[in-house]
Length: 542
Image (cartoon, rainbow, N blue to C red; front, side, top):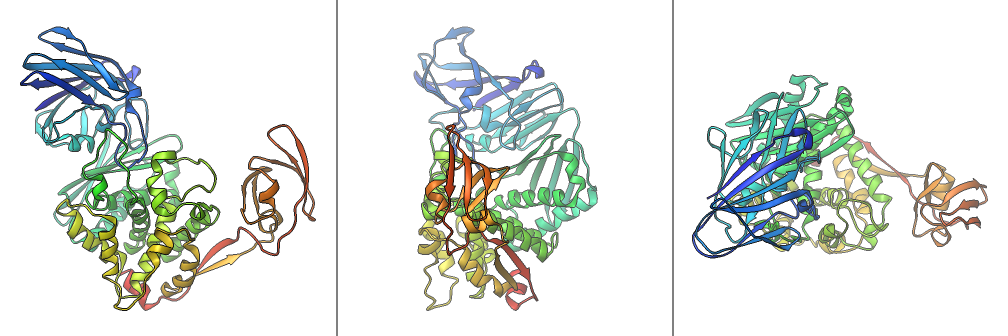
């Protein structure tokens, strides 16, 4: 067993003091690997940038060490005994997957700051925390007072801790399962309304899966005074950051908080347990690639929103508006022309979660959610549903921690389709490079939802094919003539309805262009009209 002790002598510095005791039975090399990434964010985080003052002691004497790479430390040991490693970690990032220390709280995702002893996958870890504030919640099981236990490093990396001066603790039960809500920050919403909504979401998800994977689950909410929106999944809970907290007075923003809560709760099955073999177990020492991002985040994004509707937390009109907004967002990006959703999933490690080259790839959340909706429509037309498929995925791949190959996951979907139904959905929209929007337009009416394209007589947007904000060109349709002469970032100085533009370019040159009009119109505005309920809609929401 490896023993960790984490303390914080000076919260104002935001540095943690960390000690690890490593029992060694024979001479050799001991390697300590700090994760380079965390679950839920498939992009290098390089936590080693926050480490300082690394040292090793044995029998009260300093020991030499060396680094094998930026996140791997090594010690040559010649004697058996207990070696002590010391280092400091800067906890100065507030989001749902990081670590933060201030004069009110110490909040840790242990994957950020704890090192794995390489080659000891099945060894256990013990944790003691000597912190200036009371421990409010730790998702590791408490072995004895203020001492916590993990069976292996995978459990360490999946765990969070909050020690704080103040915290609000609410809870509710669904059958034999207890759900805790730990809230740090100012509360600007009504307790019972929030808990009732969250409980309805949990009931609806549990009903479709048949079981919840844990007896206890912890929602840890960081309600912040500044703009923030983030959530990260764990087996035994989730961390959600939201701000400004004061906005939660408004129903729109409270629904956002419930939406991300539903999304993260769904991850308790999908991702935390229903997981591709590529990520089972997680390898935090290197980039862990997968093409299954559309399953991990696309299906979760769609289903998380759907359970707001199925539980009665939002209306069909509210849900249609959310889908409409996603379609609008996806319609203004052409990454699908250049990268399939499989390739885009693999490439989260390249450019992560920020905008890079325009129209380079798809968004696994937004595009993935629309693909998931398309799959659900296809299944509903054949008397099944995506919820039914995910329940079978839980039994086959998640419950016993087996994991799946993408082909075996897709086969679960094919088995739900009627015999003789020719299905090219996968090759068209998943491995292929085609827009999912025409498919949705054709099939949404089965739910009593009609997707309409409208052109609002916006000359720049609809006729010339350019999207402008504050006189700056933000997007150019690749099929427009404007794509041949205009650049992103160009500033429009003047415009004439005959297509004449005066442009200032970032290189300091002024341009005068006469943009040829096209027979086509560009960048429609999408609207979903809700009509009468259909039998398929009733089955969808059952």
